[in-house]
Picture 1 (tube, helix red, strand yellow):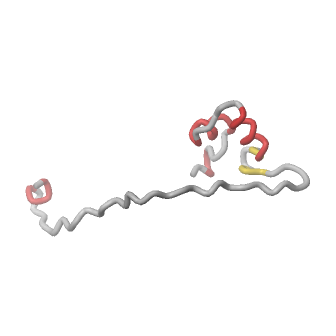
Picture 2 (tube, rainbow, N blue to C red):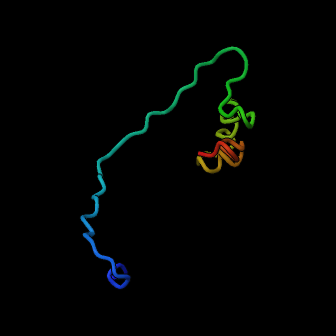
Picture 3 (cartoon, rainbow, N blue to C red):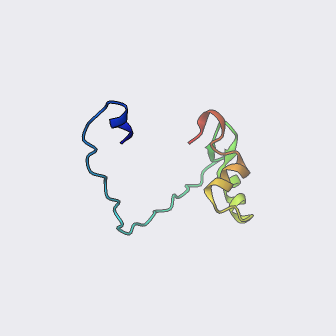
Amino acid sequence: AAARDAGRGGNIGSMPVADDAAFSLTPLWHVAGKGKAFVDQQHDVTASDVELAQREGFQSVEHLKRYTTLGMATDQG
């Protein structure tokens, strides 16, 4: 209706349908090596920082990012 009122037309098309199929996530794994295992080099976050955050109860990705500064600033995402 808003498009018509603005003098535009067109076909809305059909809305996509969400797939409700079950899925499973495969956990990432870590291969131990010499030295630090960096997850985010820009903020000096290592795999051990992520493990510490998990041990302290930060299980949500959003909380983990805030706790470790993982993925903040120019490398967000």
